[in-house]
Length: 403
Ligand SMILES: Cc1cc2nc3c(=O)[nH]c(=O)nc-3n(C[C@H](O)[C@H](O)[C@H](O)COP(=O)(O)OP(=O)(O)OC[C@H]3O[C@@H](n4cnc5c(N)ncnc54)[C@H](O)[C@@H]3O)c2cc1C
Image 1 (tube, rainbow, N blue to C red):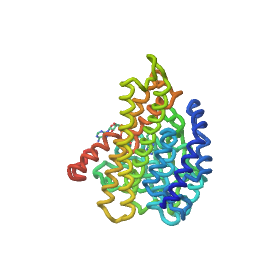
Image 2: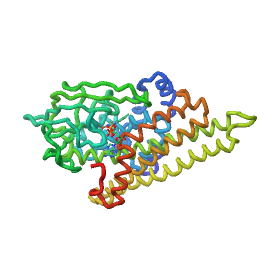
Image 3: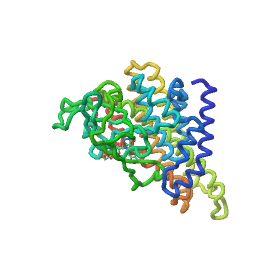
Image 4: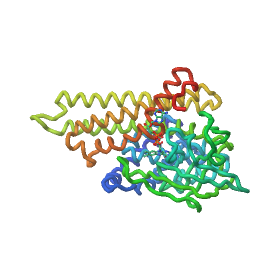
């Protein structure tokens, strides 16, 4: 992306964030999805930041997109999660593995905001191990028939289109390991529309945080999708899901960097205003220690997020280079693990600086604390990512303890 386009995009994101904030504040208090989010994102044309311009996107490289997501992350993990669901794990697999027909059908409309996307991999019995999924598909004439339940899906209730994954025939005893083929069965990916018969959706509301994000589940019952909506070759679903998680993890890491940045902005401001013991609390050394902690979290997270984004760009420039792909995959996992934990700690520091007001959802630190906690769970839990990193250190797949 050239510097002028990059500047314009980041300036649009800044304007979007500034305009969104007052609406988000209200929705946060009222625990509801922010219906200004999509119209404002349409206004600033940021619903397809990394999508190529020929499909209506902004053509951002990963490093620029990560910067944009960090800024959006300042507005809250819920807002950033919308973009992750729509773009990083929604549009991304279509633009990477979709046929020309699928790209044409879904990318321009989703960049305009006429279609909103989601990514449905997780199921009630298949979280950390997607190979335990129970959803199935079957080919019948000119379409596929899908059955199954997807659980804890970002944007599920507002999406017009969902990328879903299923096995090719009814469950049989598991025998395979880690390859996406289990008991001779294959996982395939599909792009499905939510306005067709055979899909029932439900919002999941009993969440610890992110009250303005839409999180839901859906059940597919003899849901029919055209053959053309198969994403990538049949049987490539697991590879597509894992490849998409590289993009998704980076988006989470970038959003966490934004959370830390906002905690820092808020904490500096508060520490210079709040008086106790005859001086502003920013003059108390132990309060300064909290500030230094947030700043170190910011500095280190920015370094690891940008390193991971650059690795992703390097890999995209040479799609057949497996070493670059593996490096981008590992760095995305490392960035997500590091930044999500750093953001949790930074939010905790900020809550402490705000004292009693910190432990309130009327102030931003408390919101960040509750919201950002999920970043250590979705798109690969802390535990799964640690084992992935250790396996890479030990020498590869044979050491993958999470298989
Ligand atoms: C708000 C929210 C939004 C989400 N959005 C999406 C989405 O858009 N699309 C989507 O597909 N999914 C989404 N998810 C699902 C998310 O990716 C899963 O929750 C996550 O992968 C963990 O799966 P699980 O909840 O089933 O936990 P489990 O897999 O049951 O894990 C429970 C605990 O056991 C640990 N554990 C599991 N296996 C091992 C092992 N082998 N070794 C050591 N520890 C292990 C885990 O680390 C965790 O601590 C979302 C979740 C949330 C909460």
